[in-house]
Length: 68
Image (cartoon, rainbow, N blue to C red; front, side, top):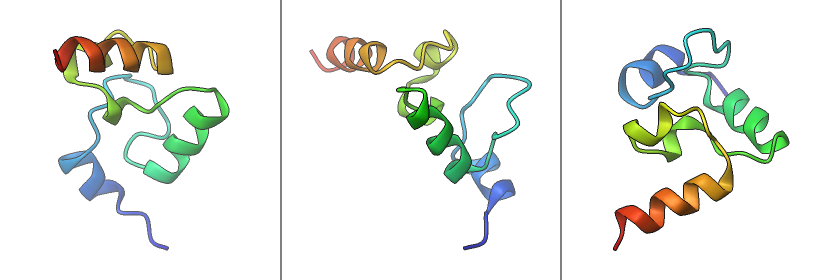
């Protein structure tokens, strides 16, 4: 499968971590965060993503807060 890095960066990737080597490479990003017990930036709204807290617990907190 061909990675569509440029397309991912311009349309889908909201990662704000400046030195991320996986930015725009969804397969690598998801695998990395899964190994770490986390979720990638694209699962979070902008304000929550900028905290760099990728934990599943943080995702649940944000989801509950935004869906009341």
